[in-house]
Structures are given as structure tokens and as C-alpha cells.
Length: 115
Image (cartoon, rainbow, N blue to C red; front, side, top):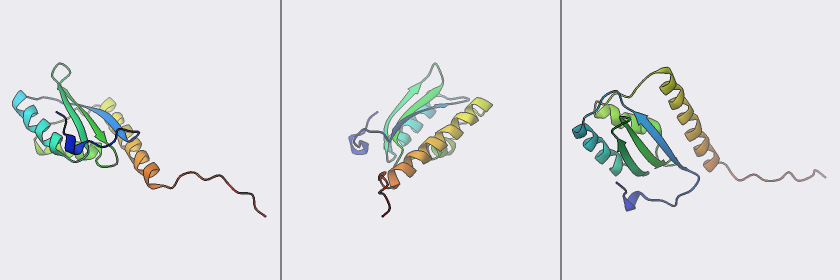
């Protein structure tokens, strides 16, 4: 489910995240994928029924995994919350914040010798 209007130039700020669900039904997945697909910055959404997960590719400058989790909560779809999942989400937040910080900072400039 790709949307041309959301597409930006693919680059270093695009990230792919996998969200594992506790339970799901096909009807729930249709609503969630439509909502995610219409969100700003989302490039693609893929539901993987065997793993009971959703894979989302998005631009980290425009959205973040916390906003995607909020969409799951709006649709009453609980995500797995084991230790491994909590560590993965913390890592996601760290990487996404790092991408935003790197994009907002100026380019590295070599030091000039003092006179």
C-alpha cells in the first residue's frame, strides 16, 4: 500500500520498523493499515499474518514509532510488551531521535587553527 503523495526522496532518514501484535483479526488489520497508509511520512505498510506483525517503512524526519504505536492504541490493538520488545522500542526511539538531531544540526566543519 504505497502512496505517491507520501513518498519523499529515499535516503538515510527512511527506517523500517516491525511491530509485533498480541492478537489481531483481518478486519482490524484493514483499518489499521488504511490509517497508517494515510499518515504523513509513511511510505509502505505490510501485514505479515504468520508472524502476526506489521512492517512499516517511514521517514523518521516526519513521523516516529511512538506515533505509530498511538495509532495501534486508537484501534485497540495491543502490541507485545515483553522485555525484548521494550528494549527494541527503546532502541527505535534512540535511533529516530538521533536521525532528527543529525538532520537539524549543521554539517561538520573542520577546525581552523587559531592565530
